Length: 96
Image (cartoon, rainbow, N blue to C red; front, side):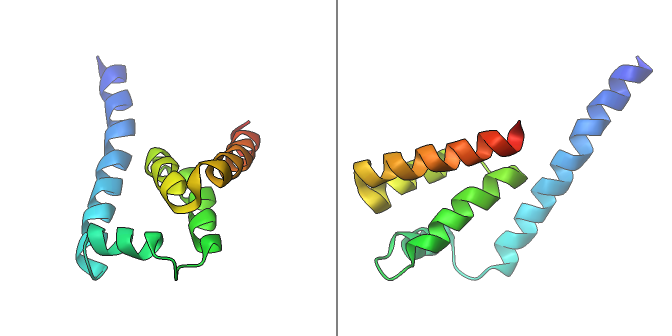
């Protein structure tokens, strides 16, 4: 029973710390999620910023699925497929 408790706490504490960090960022960063989404989808936003965030954030545990949806909207299906394949190759190389 003691081993089960240590396993639960080993995963629960980092998850709670990450949740607390995300909640604190919600109060620190100005604007809401709609403002951030509008910023990334704007034509004025450099595509490199979006691609860099798509490369870096999932390495730290951010889910890739929102990026997959947004990359299709921002770049269109042809370029989205190319960018996604290249970034997945990078992620698989880092993870392996």
